[in-house]
Image (cartoon, rainbow, N blue to C red; front, top):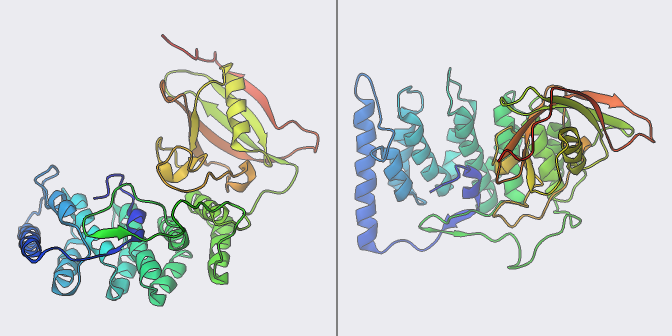
Length: 383
């Protein structure tokens, strides 16, 4: 159901008319079959799930819809058994169950989502995804069902000691007030419109937010030790038309860029904090001696094609979000933060960038400046 893997897209779904009775009976039988198969696997001495289309998670993906009553209780029971288990193929099955729980939006799930946010296991690659589902579940209840308990739990999670939980909670809190548009509507659900059809909100028209939400986002934007948590908080404040914290005036960020593993070329440059990311691109191209004749994007997570951290935000995505511009000094950059610039979507030139810190500059200093270079810059076209 979630082809791009982003649970936040479930926040804007709600239940609509049920299936015809004969279809519903068949759906219930198929769901119970998958849940029993998961339980049988968990009962073995060494649980192991398939990782291909034979996985119960793959079939749950196609069965997913909002559920209530006994079916929901069954899913919760199976999920609580699965959560502490470590085995092959668990991630796919867990994802399938979590999608049911998030789509259901049942207020009784608030304690479960709190448990999931606090759950910690060693060497758990699924931990951040699990936290995103938990935060999305709370956001869906807060937005679609006006659950104050879910809203309070989400607000509390923005101050969690773990950066991954903060990150998930901040994105979900933003989705309560400005959810993104999903690419694909799951069966049995419809879209909750946040504005009039065909009407786009301009960045200047601020969305009215509770004072607690503004305070929580501002605190994360400034004080969080997790860069992506700071970035998401600033991005949401900007999208909703509120003040975004910025670096002091007459400062600049130092950057170091390289050209992947194919070249020994490196360059250091500085960009004033009050300049847009376009100046970072111009500094990169100047250091490489390349022409500025292709599309580009910055991915602040360091993963190319990650729409969640893409800058310019909204320009290359399928959503209805307005294009968001943040200056360099509004991104929450600190020494050691790494991100990537993808230049020329045909050749896919991946240019890793590392922030070296903040320095003071004079008011008359240029918008960007190349400080040093090592190695020969690669050719722009290698064909």
